[in-house]
Image (cartoon, helix red, strand yellow):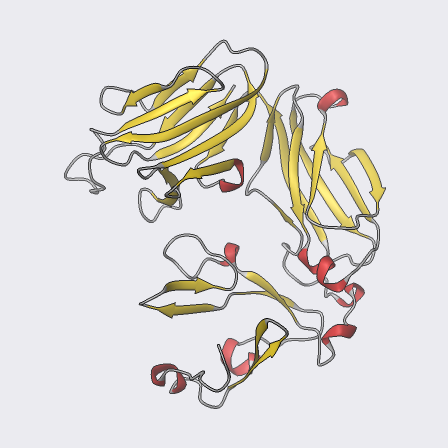
Length: 330
């Protein structure tokens, strides 16, 4: 956008004519927008230097869809878990330092790459990716303490390290840890507010949920997508389009595909997937055609596999879209 032709639509200008100011310019090849927002009167935020809150900026235009500053999947704009963070730094943003972060801020300034408990099959490595965008922006090189705690809170693994770049992928090997639930923690030495605690577990079966897009690799001309199913309950399913394909890998000796439940009238109508056919294969095994009609929700894709890492490939075959709930590695 250019300052000489940018304008606020009349329906928006009438809502906040005096409480927002805007400056549009260029920094090299980049286009920049500076917004001045009266936090107290517009958003109800009594901010102080070091405070953080979730923020997203959305442009709604019918001709070009929805554009989000922080990417938000699905049709809803108001998804706080997908919003970015706003840090109040004062007028000299370049002078802000990590020790100035308020300890009253909500958690989430350091994020794991997957929601919920991060799991691995008993006896196999567990990997998780940690994102720390604020440290990269502020060029902070303070050390971090990385630790694993058991259910009693006792640290069973602990190491201090200096991390020069983010995101970082950590791989935990269960050689000295029995199967069970643990907590993986990251703590900055320069700010108590910059911390992460995420549940992890080694267990006998791994569930790869449809909404866990970090574990999928998409291929083909048309990208698969996730959508709420049933609507309004917070559960996502994965839909494959014609000429789309997904692959997912994990450890185990057996792989299963779980389909979403079907609904018959007069229940909620989502269209029939009775004529849907998917094509699936595990590793280098031959392709299988799997028809939804006549199959149970839990479909065995391969059993009695050699122990190790296995790759599942699924693509649309014919008919209607078939909603995939999750994959199970055991």
